[in-house]
Image 1 (cartoon, helix red, strand yellow):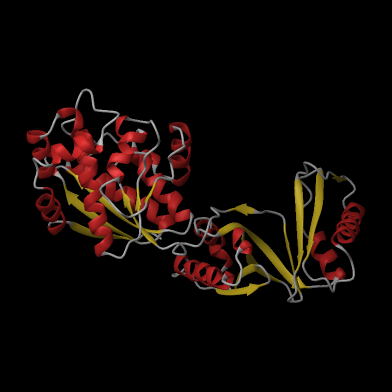
Image 2 (tube, rainbow, N blue to C red):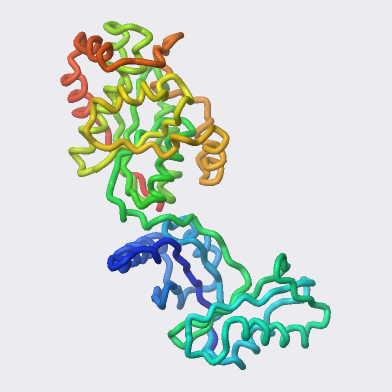
Length: 388
């Protein structure tokens, strides 16, 4: 019996010990969420997940969605056959070799009861192919076509010639939950994507300063949340009005410290939202030295007001690297739309690049921080974003 299946491969989950099954079960749950409106069957066999009993008309839709599931490193649209040398020969010969000149057979023999080694299968099937297709040559290093043969312990073999890359990482939700500071720029959506790739489920907070910033700026961030939720799953987006806070800082604090004080209050609000929602970390899109508020001293001063860990996955990335990922995940075009966020409001000409905690605390004594923070949280707007 021969049937079409989609073979799913996961990477570093193999490194997990006794709790490996928990990661795999979470991966399976996320796959089912991603494919919730499609009909299919999901099975597991010795280091592989297998999707079967699906409508082949939607094969490409399965591929596109599965490529965005964290934990999968590759997928292949394969034929599943009963394991026997005759079956393997027959099905390999049915593949299309007409438009290539070089090929390679690559066998993985998980079934150690099969009487031939992987290299023996490679050699034998290669000879069979060469006998039928006289124009072909074997190229072990850069072939035009690679025929993959997997012999699994379930008595089945899987044959395919295209391995499709996926995002990799760890299953979403396997590393807890965190809160992403989501601006309208290029960096923060990428930071959220990268932390989700490490298994962190995210909520997000956005600070806006209407009427100093436009409603389009807010809509831009909602769109960015939709775009990363295709990878990161459902996102609870907390929208915080920051106008009153910025006006208070502008009236009462030194101009060069305005960004520093602003960032410290943002972190306080983020920590309160995190504590109220059971989130264990704060995530930012900061990159060391990119702007004045992202120096080592500035980050130390902003970190000092919170006790939660602050993850900065872009800390060592340069701008080109960040932009490359932004393009890859589909957020770049939205990020560069000309709608500015609250960080551009009352922007000082010469922001301090080496602030001190002592000076920041001195200036904050002129503000009713607790009241400003609580009022902002009391008036938050919450949106549920789900494009997963």
